[in-house]
Image 1: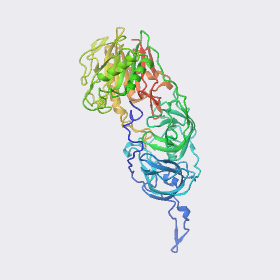
Image 2: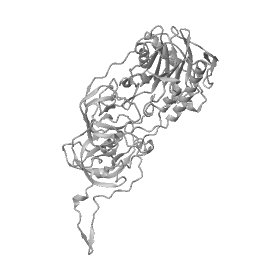
Image 3: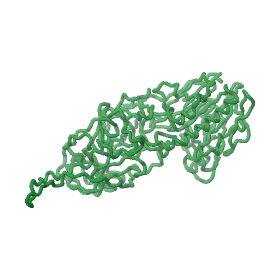
Image 4: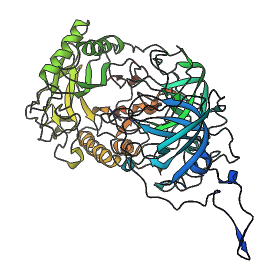
Length: 627
């Protein structure tokens, strides 16, 4: 599994857990509260009035991402309470100044952090707040994200109640710039003056804590188990054919994407269970928040009404008699400890949605006791339970081939020993078994000119290569269909864990995990070249979760010299995705073929990624070929 940054979210702590870290203080700006005086004859001339000493929220927020007041005490800052977070360990309230300045770079709102204490404040209260200004980095400063300007150790007085709230700033295609972030050569953009009319990240930062709204919000990322979804302020920008937001290049991460959570008590208004392509009709509004699980979002005090517009799950056609159907499916940490209902749903998808492919490359098959870390590496029970479920769903009696990894050496959930594996239908295709394959022995290409074979089938590609450290090793198998050999390589490249997020304060964000995937791609590319050196017309399929995009350096390394063709590039642009992460519909799983295979029919079958109800977070893929 993957995504734009880590392939999966790391195991999440409480949504509201905090470990504040203070940044180094910047030199404070001169305050309007300081008295500018001239001494004449020892007398103080032109004294300032008391009203000139008031510190307002826009003074605190400043014109960059860092407050000029960070680390300093402020007193009697005026504003109106616009929202209250009364749950979790990050409680507090948002205050917005009803008297804004004329600088679009300065936010007029701020979050008052009260920790685990429920604040005695109500929406509509006119308050004066005193406390210490701080910059809080969600996830910790080392995570590389932006900070949230807050007032901590706060006290406040309520001057009146029931006051009208400031109008919400409307987020739409005309107010959110198409350019996402200023470039800083990979360095921090924190000290750059905000240009909210030029960059989307600057626009959002200039609205930090302020009331914002979306009208008829288009859902581009389904509701998660954490009761959050992704919508877009730019409903016509980069859309997929099914209503998502297509991530088609590093230069365009869909600036209008914004996360939506809720401050409304669940008993009063359950969070909408939405799929990609749905809509929240009407107005969705609340303060603009920021966290380490996706960046900027609306903490909604008003939610639009769910309008179910999402398309149905797809079903691909069955292969013809002379077509070999090969599929790839990331089954997301599957083990006997997985609820039986998931096995049933995966089986139904294989039989009905994928039309019972002849060969299936599986990723994230765990060992026989799942995450129990006791040295178990066999996955026979896992694969038997899956194949039994397929048969119960009316599918073929699949056989399987796989190689047990060395304990805890292939990454993934500790103790789970995830690996790739093959299912195949022996009534349609046969597996060419060659003894000798194990976790550490590299498979070699053997045979005579025009007749390639393998030293082991199944076998692992170059398992001792440092490229596979703490990562799944590719599994290669030789199949025979209608008398012709077909070589299939099942892959699961390393995840994007450790990469900086799109909303990082470092721009452009660093993709450190990419280096290992490039090396992995080169290893698989070299193996395919070895096969083609024996037979330039060999039928080779490389499939699996490559954890990277079709335009990435890793995929360029894998397809170098035309050795392999990435089939996703043959699809219409709006169909090039099979995974949705933070509202971006993107490609992580791939199927590639050797140059000889020209007569292929390729399909990404959308049954999971766009839906709140998923049996995996990846969509499966299938290709039908005529060897």
